[in-house]
Length: 333
Length: 304
Image 1: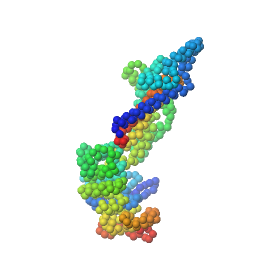
Image 2: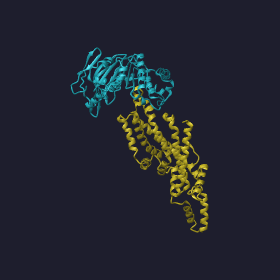
Image 3: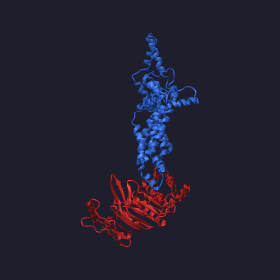
Image 4: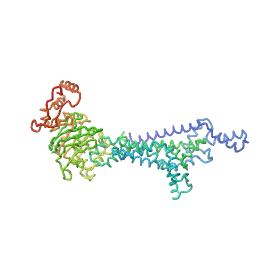
């Protein structure tokens, strides 16, 4: 199969995944027991001390339904939804923060989440793989099991316990980091950048610690298995150095499944964002998603979930496209 | 000339010591192909590892010595202590599993230069290697391919190219043709023998195939239970085997139209357990250059 055909096939699959994802996203909030229009009318009603006439309420309801794309039967809603999302990337205004556009909210929050989670996921992956490779390659040495122990120790701790412990330890008992971080807004200056990095360090540390353990254990297991492969033994009998064997033989082969794991975890960062951002009151997508879920804010939910779907599907596409570069055996098929 | 003096190699596994090679004394002359035969567990591979100098836990050198009689690249004699530095320079190795002895994710040319070798100029090595593999019946482009793009026979040719490229004095081939079909097997063996004649070095070939031994080796070494049973010129060993075990191995070669094989296999199955023969470490020279362990004839009830 040619390169073009391969890429086209993968891309077609990508589009299909996005389409199915969008359809499910459309359905899910409509199964929730909260009706946002009723909630909104209730709010106005109470503000007006119940003086609104039923006619006025009916009129308001009709207006709101048009505004939020809830007019007509479900099929009409679905098509207008697809048109808006796919063509304009427009999710309408937020219910809770009316009249702020959902896309504006997402665009504001996205750099925060991406900056924190992409960086910490990458660092956890790099560190975990390096430690795991050494632990796996030298698994016959006693000292290497200390490295593995780090992984065994960290991996099973649930993230919320780890995060709260680190928060208590480094912000309360030893107040190195601020307990409730402040993030400056407006134009960026170097001082502000420094402040953001300082305030983001604590959540970043918890994320690295949480991701680190799994990467160590996974890479260690892969490296141990690869060390026993005949080509590694043969390289040793050729007189290739430990470094060559560890990097070019064991690492290059054990890397393949780890790249898949990395891409998948990058796709899942918006899910990881939720807990981190709530615990550390970090102004990212996770915080927005949580507010939207409790307030029945359809439009924000659509926006945030669509973004997650986009991220997971894109990560899958990226794996499919870079894997042949790492594994020549896939290239020729 | 390689001399093994009362060599004993043991494995320590869970507090138990197993002597896989137990008192082997023999002399391997220069410019000679030596075939090593014997059943699985007879100590062939352990002996080869010991000669190659690849001794690592749980394997250990418990007695005896190896006298290589070779000069290393630095002009000093090769000893059991420095033999690792001579790997793929004065002494090289052809592995059993050619199918997966090459790293699947990097190009073959890179696997030609990722170890010290005798020449530190990698570019020059590659240029010469490209020409060299042509002589071995491989297209020069094979250097630029990944292992999975080559057939099994090509891969084994590549292993032979790697092992012979630096013109070593000693090559150890551990069942070099087991994974190949008979036609390719023959080509590979012929190639190896041609190269040996050209280089005038010593090759130790481990194989279970007595036919292979008969075709290509100058000398035969028969091992059993960690000891040498019989050692001599191949012609002499095949024509006049002294030990009962050697006889049985040679008799196991099937002949077209010969039905007596069935009986041999049946009697083997009947005898069951190992150590059916008693083998002493001392060899007796029955003819010039033809040694056999005592007792050569086994008691009634043992095999043969």
